[in-house]
Each structure stands twice: as structure tokens, then as C-alpha cells.
Image 1 (cartoon, rainbow, N blue to C red):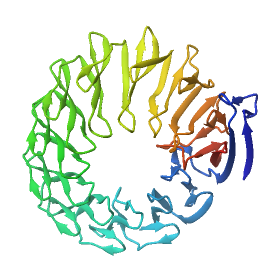
Image 2 (cartoon, helix red, strand yellow):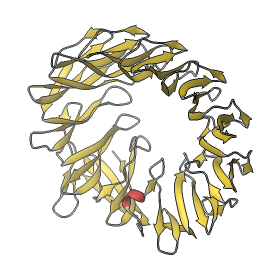
Image 3 (cartoon, helix red, strand yellow):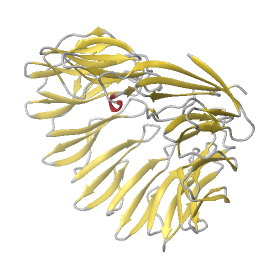
Image 4 (tube, rainbow, N blue to C red):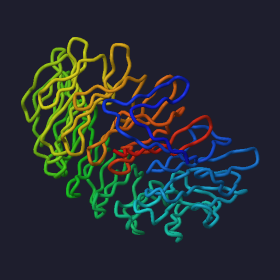
Length: 486
């Protein structure tokens, strides 16, 4: 492990300099090798949920071997479906030797079967349970916790509940599909399309088909048949269910079994965080509107970026009329711009920000105050967790990108991705590129250079002042880490 103390700026080699923004904070940069890519491609790499581990299948003419953090596992004739546990501590996959298939956890092999049900391997949210479908002869069955379930002609959609205590899947027998929940079979239908548990794990909803028409089954009770039905959404408190349905060429939302008005199209459904309110965007003829709590809003040429504040008390969206765009906040139309986008509420729900464009220049508007005025914007506006700080990535006329944090412009790069604030709101980080080299940047100080970062979702931060990402330099994989020491 190499350690480099960066203060003010760092030269990363090849004449590429990544300088500090402002007052030269101190940042410690380290890297740990996780081995080299062997007989695989970058696109084959599987990253753990915590973005600290990486696995891939090294393939030769004679064998497939799982490589985990640079260490070789068992070798098989074929390997597929590399799956990390949610806590990133374990990896499971299907392996075939000859004509026999088995699930491998780490290096431990499970029972061998004649075949596997594709896309069936699942690890529970608490990372303690594994389930999958396997074939023996012409019959398949669920294997959960090492125990084989009832045999069926086919199966699909293996699903754990959020609390990891329940499991559901679709099973086919005698030409009919049913949903099996905790071993209990539901009614048989022509097809099962999707299965959902409620957030509290107590309720189950799925879309079934009979006679070519889909309908929703909630806790065993069938809903009305439609020409289409999909996009099941439970409310956060698990008491409400909404889904999109269609009749002929028309679409509408069904919320708590009540049909909304027919529209040409429906999108962007949301329950409020407190589950008491709901909204969606609708189009009728050549006009669009937001439907809030079942009531049609004002018609516009377009509407988008709708959402509730975290406390559920406020609601906003971006609308367009006559070539101009503006924010509609709690029913009141704001100032018109040539373009507007990215409406967000602060975590404490007291502040509002969005991107806006006027006379060819982009700016951010925070609580009604405009700042900036540049060629372009990357990724939208970010509030810090304490709601006091605001950050964004702008592009200048030369198409160079830079951060704009608390009104202060940072260094310019060829590109910037993944801006985020630390959990304590004191630091910020992002990925930056210059001259085909990339680096993690913390508080304006750049770390070691890499050829690329392995793409992952979410914040870089492990804690109040530590960040990490998986990176590539040549064919070698690194865990890149940085820590703000002051």
C-alpha cells in the first residue's frame, strides 16, 4: 500500500496537474491492488455493493475460474451469474462441471443438479440466505436454505421480502402459473408477470394474466382486468398500492383500487414519504399536467421533474409553456426561463433548487437566488445532508467542467462525474478527468491517476471524511481511497 500526502496540489505524471481548489486542504491518498484482469474484459467485472470488492470469471479454453479481489477460486467448465451479497461479504454463482450444475458460495459447493433455472439466484437483503431454482429431469424446484421445495414444470421471479424472512416465486404446473409464498400456492393463471412485497414484508402483490388480460392480485384478492397493468408501487407505510393500467389506447393510474381519469399516457408516479399523498404526470391530447392527490392540475405544454419534499408538505415540478420553462412550487408558478430542470428539495425540506438557462447560459437557482451563468451543466444541483451547502458541476464555453460549491468555482477538467457531499456535510468529492487520466478529488485535492473507474451508484463516502472507488490502471484493479485529514 502506497501513501501520499497531498497539500495544495499534486502532479500526477505525464505533465498532468490536479490542483487544489482554494485553501489547500490536506488529503491522504492510498491504493490497494486487487489483482489484474486475466482472460476477461473490463465489462465483465462485477463490483460489490460497497464498491470495495471486485470479481470476474477468468476464461480459458479449458476452464472458467472466479477471481475475487485477485484471489483465484475453484475452476469449472462454465461459470455464470456472479452475485455479491448485499453486505458485500459473500459471493455466489452458478458453476457447471460436465453436465452437473451447483451453486458455489465462496469456494463451498452446494448440491449438484442437472440444470439451473436462469436468473433465479438470489441472496436475501440481510445476506444470510440464498435461494435459487434447479432442475432434475423435467422438473424444477426452489432450493432455499439448502432445502428443496415442491417440483414444478417451470418457475421464475424468485423474490425475498425486505426483512429476508419470506420468499415468493412464480411456478408453473399443468399449464397454469401460480405464485408460491412461503410454500403456499396461490390460484393458477395463464401467466404471472411480476411479484412485489410491501416495504414491511407483510403484503404481496403481483400481476397475473387470464384470457390475455392482466390484473393485479393483492394479498390473494383479484383486481379488475385491463388491457395492460404494470408498475406496482406500494406506499412507504405498506398500506396503499398503486399501479398503471390501460384500456384500449388509454392509460390511467389505479390507486387503492380506484381508477383515475383516462389519459393518453401516464408517468412518474410517486407516493409522498408519509404515504398520505400521491402524484403522477399525465398527457391528454397535446397537453400535459400533474395529477396531485387525484385532482387534475393546470395544463401545460410539458411537465417533468415532479416530486414531494422529504416532510411530504411541499410539492413541485417543472412546466413548460410557449417555449419557456418554470418551476411550479406548491401550486405557484415561478419565474420563466429558456429552460429549467433538476428540481430538488433540501433534506430538511426547507429549501428548493433547480437548474435554469437564460440567453444560452446555465445557472442554479437556490431559494429564488440565481448564481452562475455558464455553457452547460452536469448532473444537476446537490444539497449537503445538513441542507446548508449547495454544489453543482458547470461547463464553461470551452466545454471544461468545474465544481461550483457554495458559490465558489473549482478547478477545470475535461469531465467530472459523481459529485457528492460527505455525511457530515463538511467535505465533497467527485471523479475528474484530464488528458485521458482520471482521479478522485476530495475538497479540490486530487488523488492518484487511473485509466478509469469502475462505475457504481451512490456516494463515495465511507464516513465523514473518507472516500473510495474501484479503479483501473492498465490491466490492474485498485481500491483507491482518500481521507481528508484537516
